[in-house]
Image (cartoon, rainbow, N blue to C red):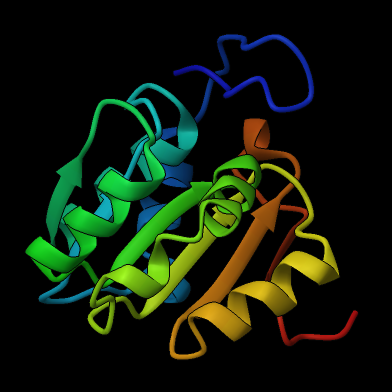
Length: 157
């Protein structure tokens, strides 16, 4: 598989089958009878993690080829998406575009954000725009199949 290249160039990484299975069973990612949406390549760890988690939990998956803020809202509304995975830059773009208020996004329950720390200002904006969505952030040593940080945004370190 490949890393996303968040902190540098994308590169091939080796992971054991066991570590991938453990990631797929993470309690934060439990999504029985849900619909998930993400834009991560399937050969990146986040794509593999979300894929395995969806298989383990029997959830439906929407894979869209490129991130577009308005299309994201349309997909969430049309397919009653419950879980979304964004990179930090996608979250910033999504909030800045301001389309969320134009769509019914009530089905959306969990937002998983990876790649880098979410700034407090962005966390506050997300809570203001979509207060019903639980936001989980994870970043760190994905190459080793363990996040340095995985927490809800209300958690204090």
